[in-house]
Image (tube, rainbow, N blue to C red; front, side, top):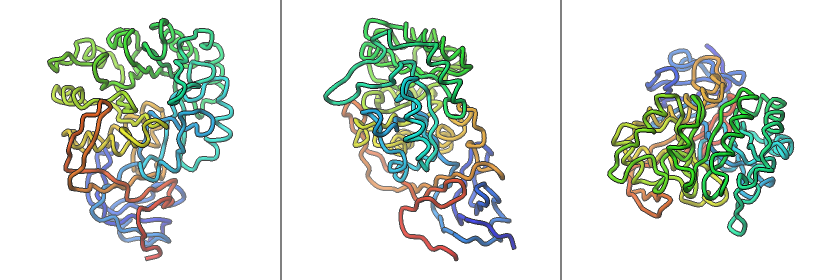
Length: 387
């Protein structure tokens, strides 16, 4: 009889990366996925947990978050939030720039139990003025944007830096328009990385940004409300949006404080335009609503009619591919031993978008437990160990 470190028993293993969707036991050993199905069911482990009625997914990835806690005004604590969001890998997008990335690495990333990767900001100081009292668009001053410095720091930290971030729009690049995006692409090209581009109020227009982005680059805040929505007032998806998807531009939700509306989401989903990535854009100004965390964002899409398998794909397989980390993508034998166990809770649940519109849903996703590197890291309620 095989002996493992941990076995999750009786859950629905939903793994779009391997095409698996079945009730099965899953075992972990030596920090990796060790067995699924019959072998896991026949084995024993030092820690066993019944997860009947739960959905077991690969460790979920939040591709757009701000977790440089203590180093930036918008940063939240990754490990604390993970316990309610189910996130095992965070991608901090632009909290740190070339001038302060070392502090982020030493004081936050290396001390975190949950995994943190990064998109380095083209702005030398990252997002440095983001609070209720002070709001400064860092791309409004081109003197802060050094492609040379950004590319150099990205190349010095290839284990962590997976892309370049830029924020443009009337709030963030002010009169500079698309210029910060061009500079970010220069840095990304030199470092061999993709760009993630934030878009807020025009100018520039949503469609103008899509014309500039390259295949593999990410448009984040892709389901924004008017103005700069991806659809016309009558709900039709803009032609340039379809062309950008065909070109290979990636569309990321990044809910946040101002970047997701039910009106836009309904129009896009009705047209068959599902997001490639579902992410939270969680930061200090939206952690208590309307975004809260990525499970809440996923719950909104579930209640809007997006299939659960596609929702899970948008927080596992697709972001793992974008990051160049296929080991994070699935629950195949030998893969990284991360898993998120969630419950679908029926009932009356009220959700809110960034415009204050409320939607009543009949389901909500909540955390049951989290496995990190083959270890049962968090449980939402007491479990039986050593069964």
